[in-house]
Image (cartoon, rainbow, N blue to C red):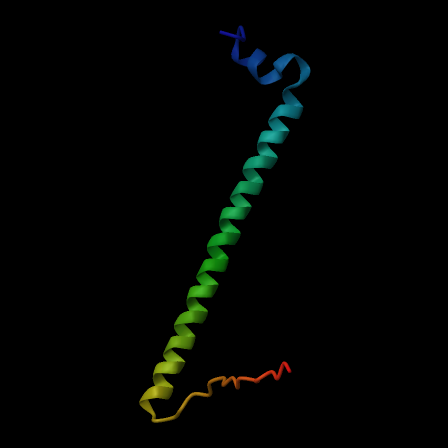
Length: 78
């Protein structure tokens, strides 16, 4: 083994606090990123479900939804 004991592994010849702090920060940030991603996904799914329900309710009531229309502009290049 590279280390004689578990204590020597944790201390890492004086570099232990730096190494373990880096590992702690890394795993904390990864956990926060996973949490934030799941939170955002849940929010997007709820928004989409709400919009789909609103669109379905509008279609059932006979209302027409407003859609964008685009007009072609003919360029005259003489």
